[in-house]
Image (tube, rainbow, N blue to C red):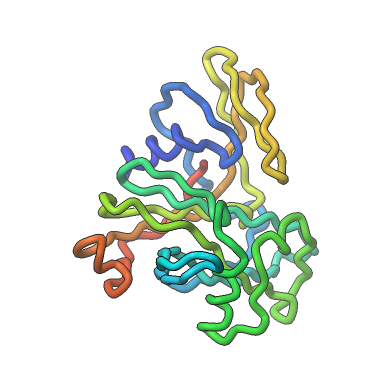
Amino acid sequence: MRRLLTMALLAAIAATLTVNIAYSEPPKPSEAQFKWQFDFRYDPPRPIQVTLPGETTKRTFWYVIFTVTNRTGQDRAYVPAFELYTNTGQLMPAGRNTPTFVFNKIKELHNLPLLVTMTSLTDKTLLQGEDNARHSVAIWQDIDPAAGAFDIFVGGLSGETAVVKLPQPVKVMQYDPRGQAKEIMTDQLLLTKQLQLTYTLPGEASARIYNPAVFASKQWVMR
């Protein structure tokens, strides 16, 4: 697990930076919660096969339906962030190259009229209380056929952060909320508290649509 955390940190530290540095061990979240944190409920990841408009061959996508509730005592901005990281090194932010058509199919399949896209939640204020909970879905393209396990990192749920000082300044690519990249120099990285969900993939890749991913572990990490 330590090796996997280190690889994930190197691949996509802080969810907004791409850095080519050696790093040994990320900081750990505080054992006593001292920052705000949203309530987060989620369904297990599932695959779905759809035929996109204009195509004749079915494609496979993976998705996680989730609910976020604000019980922090204050209305707060919510920026959902989901990344899927396989044990073969594949890193996929949720929503990348996932047409709205797929979202609509998931919404119809589960008969969830209150389900909204993650894009519609970004930078919006999450009001307090159960009545203001938001229901959405994280969607990814198909997982690497060679992968035997994957992690889902969920950000935007906590106000806890940590700063990692680098031994020397490095060039990094920084992304704004619209996905626009800009190269900057920095000598420190900002990590945020994220939920790590680990699953294994049983059987052959061709049978994944029938064999659900198997839950392995759940923990909070700084990333």
